[in-house]
Image (cartoon, rainbow, N blue to C red; front, side):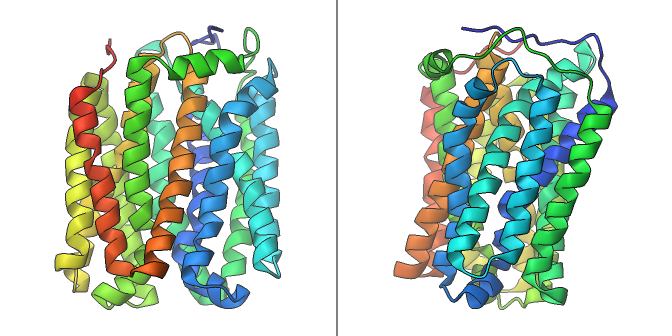
Length: 390
């Protein structure tokens, strides 16, 4: 299996911050439909469940492309690769803004999925190369803070813009942001060569090792459970809590702020014990999602539940990535590719399964589905093999 260089002579926090902004942009791009499902569905004449496929398609493409793109990139400098991926991401968002039909929207979201899968596959493994050696853990937390900050600024801002000037403007703004990030990456990142290409066979073999397999299973369960519920959080809040559009944007902002705190808390905890951290995250996430249809019948209670939900889910990305990198110390880029592929595939599966439940049974049932799936991560964590963390 190819061993990736874990350190570069050129290191610096500005480069880590640039990566964090890149992860913010790709996650905002991927999640943007969450706060816009109702107007997208109305404009393109599809149901909310069908509109949710705009998220499913992106996750599915990212899942398939992530492990394939890394071998396809070969030994190309990763700064160049990141620039190309951000250009593809921008094009996808701008095409989504123009889309006259749902078919065009799906095509646009395929391009977004390619950008998402590639950036996620690279970013996690680069954090340790760019930061000072003693700061690899905080650097990874900072890179993955882009995931949580996207919930705080990206999705709520897109929702507000959708209410003020139309959902298409939200996609235009994110497409423009991707171009700005492309320029920033080129300006701030050092050259990021690799010693040689990553082989697909090595990545597949890595997935068969027990600690990696356990970690990937936990990723699937937590992310499927979360997105089965979270993809449809807007219609759930409208139906269960009686929240209006402006209030929902504020609630998503509250959720995202909590997610940032959860990201850094999860990163610190996972550096000491990924298993213990993820046990807490799994239990809290499952319980909170289950409580939404039971006690979240008023806006204040729904807000409190979203705070706890955000704290728990905010820790998922950095905790599971920490688990996988610790389980594959000599193959960080391959581990990141697996992580990206499985994570995004789980997003697609969660959004798709949630859409089936919403259209076939109802909004309350989708919360129960999400909670039940997330809860099954607990026995996997107890019985599976955790990596050794140095």
